[in-house]
Amino acid sequence: TLVFRTRVQSDVAFDEFLAQVRETDLGAFAHADVPFERLVEVLNPVRSTARNPLFQVGLSFQNLAQTKLELPGLTVSPTNFELELAKTDLQLTVFDRYDEDGTPARIDATFTCATDLFDKGTVAGFAERFVRVLEAVVADPS
Figure 1 (spheres, helix red, strand yellow):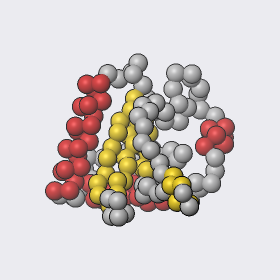
Figure 2: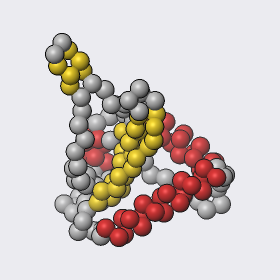
Figure 3: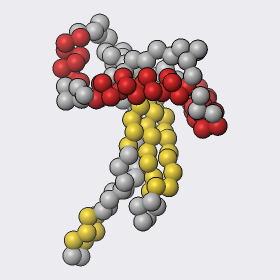
Figure 4: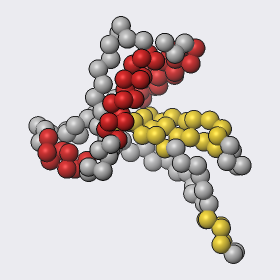
């Protein structure tokens, strides 16, 4: 788990902002070997049993092609199942999807949330706005 804090400034073009975030992220990845628990211990933030000590919104990118193991008389492959367990107050998980031949096919995204904090309509609104942002960035990266 890597924790990022990014300040969004309305006067910065999106592609410039993305470059700034990339540099911050690469700097954080240089320290990815530091366990998250150690980071929490060193920073010693104010604790609450009601929330994560360092962040409340998570983003996970699952970019691994599905694989299968084949042995004589046995084929093992992963199966998808629905497990909507929120690790944070709000979690966005993005998945690469591939065709049977391994060709990238699409990207799927799933929001999960703490249901005592968010209702389904609120999270659906977040998802709709996220899609609009992606469409705008594709249309004009600046």
